Image 1 (cartoon, rainbow, N blue to C red):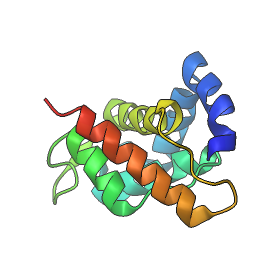
Image 2: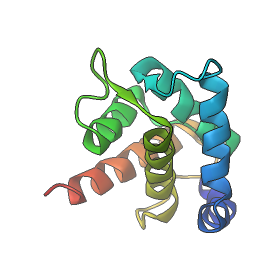
Image 3: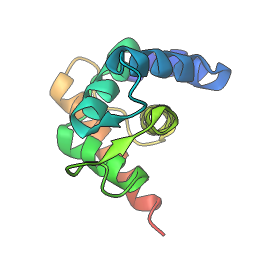
Image 4: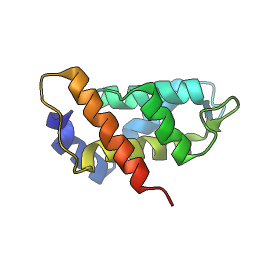
Length: 129
């Protein structure tokens, strides 16, 4: 993921990342219900990360981020509207892009994913009230 950071930073700064996230949201809500439930949110986040050529953190790390973003969203009945989904995707991308944590070694996918999880955890812990 480290090699994607400069391009991702540019996408975040100019708004292209939000536009791409909204397109991914619409693909998962073709009937226009106006919300996604947790299983769809997890698919949405994975699609956003794939769009940017990024490896996805573990389901547990995504759940932790989503639950901090909106408590209870990962539980039965939890859902996010389009704005919430795009903001959650933005938060995830910014955690992965702008965190100053040590980068994982470039050819090892498991090390990269482990590094992402560590950066996500540090960002989440620093966000606690």
